[in-house]
Amino acid sequence: QVQLVESGGGLVQAGGSLRLSCAASGSIVSINTMDWYRQAPGKQRELVATITSRSTTYYADSVKGRATISRDNPKRTVYLQMNSLKPEDTAVYYCNAEVHPWSDDTYKAWGQGTQVTVSS
Image (cartoon, rainbow, N blue to C red; front, side):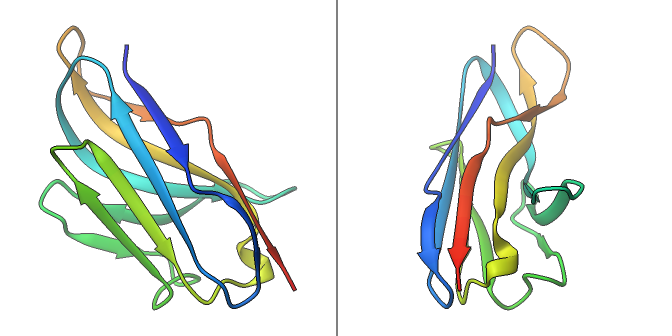
């Protein structure tokens, strides 16, 4: 059983920063692409940032220049550093990872989400 556990969310004032973490655990052979998504109330879940196994990154236009995604492969952890936060960044942030477990084929696993609230 593969688990993804996010942490680092919270309440922050506009202009502030947060660092989200997502750690994978379980019987994992490898982890390919790791992503951060977010879902604001009443809106669809959207992709925020992606990092491949070779650390190629992609950012949504809405966070480009304010977000940095990184990963620590030995720790099986992906990070999202968010700076210059805006009220519109308020959402539940979800970690997603393409994992290859020992006992199964590769699949996309989700974390439970961590709430980020930005006050104006």
